[in-house]
Image (cartoon, rainbow, N blue to C red; front, side, top):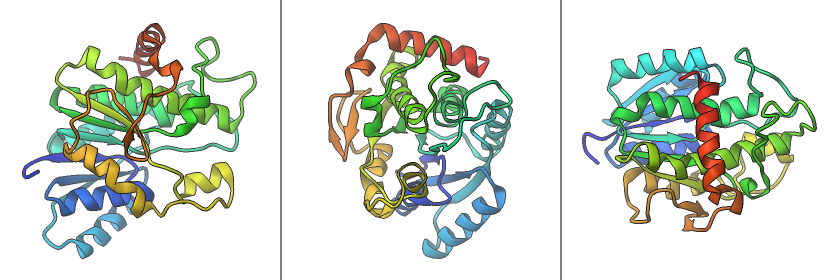
Length: 260
């Protein structure tokens, strides 16, 4: 993994921090991402203390704002373009909100922002890992109401975004032949996202959920591009994700929403 650069979004805490730590320990140069620069700086300080000699840098930008994503890519360009992108950052909203770009907040942070980030970095990438969820099996893409103005619930919005993550990974091969892409459900993990969406549910520790994701990011997988994993095992995704026409439509809509 020497000389390989990986960007792990949402890596100041939770699963992302442990993914970043494992990849840095394995010899990759890791770009730690968070929305807040102070949190990124604190995570970098902690990781450098734990891994003396590890190659680590940080970037801070809000995935929920398209202008911020573009600014973030400018930051990344100054640090060195990554070959690997782990789209790990995500939210579970408890109230419906619409961003300044006119997007439903969960869809913006969990899908449109990562989609734009991936596209802007695509020329240098050879591997993308989208952290999805088993919740995608209960999701549907509300093409006629993507902001979910009617019938919004936190779970429905989350499930829609996680289905989009799986579809995005499956569709990437048709638009960027040189990129191997995967999506993965990390299991039920005791993170702030789980607590926000489901209350005090017991789950895996974040450090226990990170290895299968880090394995995919490091290239230690022979499964075909587009494969979905559940708890580290290659698994057929929901039938909604296997709809070729829906994936193609989502790609076109995502480009329009991301203004590219």
